[in-house]
Length: 155
Ligand code: 4NP
Image (cartoon, rainbow, N blue to C red; front, top):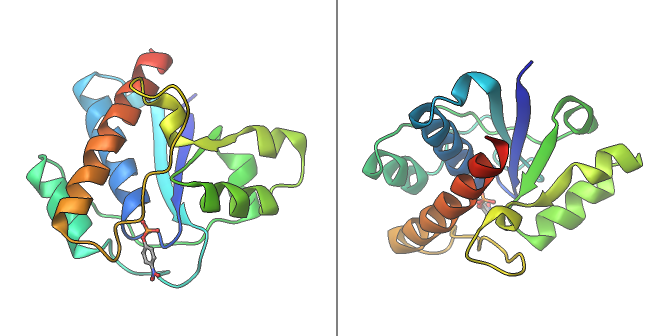
């Protein structure tokens, strides 16, 4: 059975699709992809049906992979279906915990930076929407450490 991971941000067009694409790409490189099911969603409905932001698409291409996601909003079913919900920042954490009803659902939700081996305590992956490509690169780098930490933990 696959271990199911949902990446969550606000709009589901910048950080979480990049995080999901990166985790899948890194898992493929480590021969772990077949054990994982990876998706992403947003806490808001503002970008449902949209492709990822062009800057996330470009950042992925710069690092050797492509994003094919279509924006969607997280719902209560996701909190049952997925084994782990990795959110980008504390606003996402609060918003997802608001949807969660049971202790089991709440226990699945955590900041993705809990897996960053460089950090003693979790930090936000900052929203790059109003930034430029450089901010997206910084998000990528932070997510790379988080994904490496996640996969090390998983293997
Ligand atoms: P994301 O970035 O949460 O990483 O997808 C954002 C995308 C859109 C908006 C904010 C953040 N927005 O305000 O539309």
